[in-house]
Image 1 (spheres, one colour):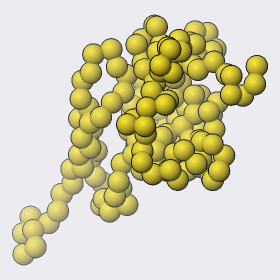
Image 2 (cartoon, rainbow, N blue to C red; image 1 turned 90 degrees about the vertical axis):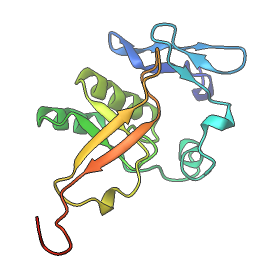
Image 3 (cartoon, helix red, strand yellow; image 1 turned 180 degrees about the vertical axis):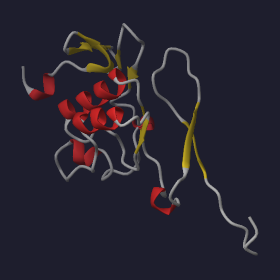
Image 4 (cartoon, helix red, strand yellow; image 1 turned 45 degrees about the horizontal axis):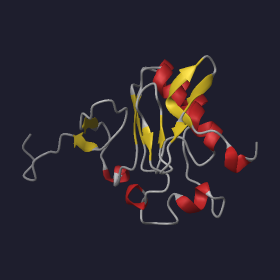
Length: 159
């Protein structure tokens, strides 16, 4: 089987040491018949309009982005971290197998991943992070609101 003919696999459902195969529908969309996760690979409405951000790295036309691997996720879980967030397009990175293993590590450790955040470098130290996800029936991922809570002294110096 060539690289382009690889069977799509659900990043959320594992059977043994493999991810569950997804069914490819006539319209090109892919669905996991176990959990209902849907991928819209040909629907441009679900893609970032910026070619360089996702499409170019995934097609090998440019470098990808910095992303933690499964070993980093396990390390963070062992330290008590429950949520990993990034300003990158995905936590998994541009290499498909490594990306799947990263998401598998997140799920197996009961962790949550949040992607595509902005202005993370502007947050002060000791910031509390909350992510208010929109609940979508039979969905393991989706949009939400990222919130940062931190204490800022009054301009006049009063606490």
